[in-house]
Length: 470
Image 1 (cartoon, rainbow, N blue to C red):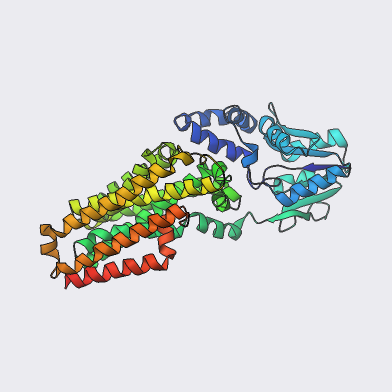
Image 2: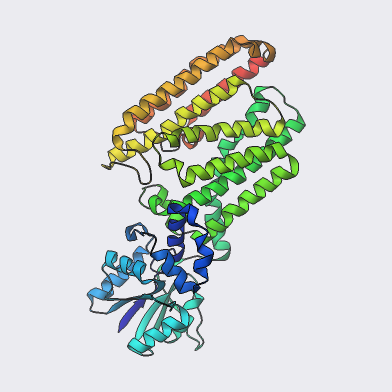
């Protein structure tokens, strides 16, 4: 008895049409205008147009490992195994060749989109009704299940067929609809990363303008930048899904793992950006300009800059500084030269720390270069040297600031600020020493948010700044 297996949403926790679309957008962003014209050729023609222009890596797909093991056992027992999918034949055959588990591939080719009734007819022509078992995942598979001997689904809830039968669950249960997507979507928004957007409060705090209107304006900037940042994270995760699946940690991200469908990430991204920009336009046109520049810079980073040697580091430092400028735009407080210079160099150091930690992990794992980046493990030492230098340049700027007129105006007892200097030397020196040891993860901001020593040092710096103010 033949075992027939669906591909999209069944064998993989994704869809090859969306995978190929994302790859096309990533590789050819300036050719997006072609998509509507390809759609005029019908769904099969659209799939063919995409498949001919992308190179999909079958190894970088989120497979259902339990289902793969089941298919392997069935084939070893002598059953014919067939991959039957609506994906384009070129892509489906690549997957089958990579897995080595299928005797035959039936897929979309020419004008026929091999899904639903078209797939059921094709299987009936080859095997006859009731002469195969079928594993699927969606309502589009109902005609195929109805004509099968034994209907299987990978979903947690069974499907009821027209003849009264229920599908039997096989493989890892997929929870891919409704409320089950809320938790993966929330996780993909990366709310912990919103900590970085607290930088919008910096102009208000640095200028000692602690008034309710300024607090509300800064809070609005925080919400706007968080929405824009989450929009960029969703797009970034969708575009980088294949690269992330080759990473030991990033492979667990919702889109990379298949817990969140690609289409939902791509749909939610522009929606969040639109809400953020609409809020800023409604309350503060200057904030709209700042948020628009930040969003454009973030998208440029996700689409291209992050793959360029050193340019990605400078871009990250600029993105941090743009958050400070966003707070200034929201409150109307002009940021000082000292604040912007200090912000740029300390965040340049943290951006280099992030790349240094990543290269250290690759070195320990015996790999040469990260996927989708312009570095090799041989770059770890110069990256570390530049990062340590940037850290101490930021300290030099702070020391010079201590001797400026701004301090005399803003602080009643500026001598307390002297205590911040050794604390920052200790903190930055400790972070970089731990990075050289390989003990800092690849996002230093999140590392700091969980590190008790770092939190204690930052609290002491805040206490000294308060003591200097009164």
